[in-house]
Length: 332
Image (cartoon, rainbow, N blue to C red; front, side, top):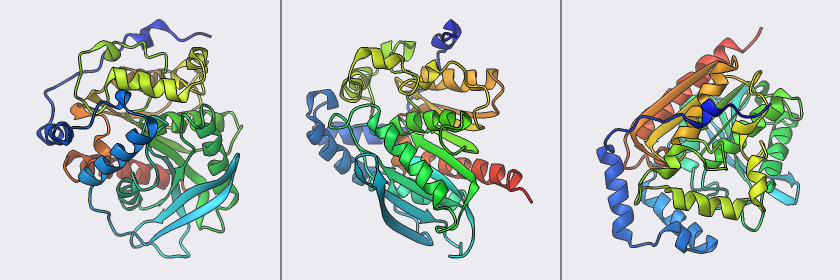
């Protein structure tokens, strides 16, 4: 089965950019840093880390934040476990396995620390963040292999860390949303432990980059089409890999049977159309979907909660959706 043409023609609504998001863009312009495609990966990582510190929300207190090292496919793999504020050490919590964004090139446990703390508290759950290997030093499918290792480890050590193996969700933003979507499908196929829910925040779902949003004139945004082509070049070893569904989950033969999803898309984003196409295809193939489209927001806004107030609202919405799903799926 090939990807149906109608999923390549979705065009997401756009509205004037939110005032808070405009402040972030003005801060980026004032910094004088060059476009990401004009930097080396290491330069881009340093700039990304500085930028995240400037716009991140203040970290919420949680009951526990603990760094863990596990055996990964290519050496040690870093994780960070969070437990919601107010939870007890003995309480068995549902858990969200979270993958940070950054185009598979940028980001780490620190860049999304505030997001993970917020999700743990909003969802009244545990969150395990994954410090997966980055490209171009580690190209596709290294990040996915790390995600598989993290999911298997989490399932196998659930009792030890007081998380419920029946209530493991996967989630992530941008490149992390891509990894989460693929893991959800692998879980459906029983190639990895099954996930009960997926949270996909402005996800990359189609690395052929053929959607209309990639052709819009959107210079000076947090993510541009040219930057996305740069990320793809760092991540993939060849153009042919963009058709591998493990890199482009929108090209999976079927999405039927995938876990329920909460999908966030934003108007000012080259990934908006493919994110909406993925939500549409999930729904058309029988998967329960909550799709939250924010036409006035920019890519990456969730980690910019120190400036963009909508970030905190959406984190609360995601948490409420997780909490409601876990309550209905708790069993006897």
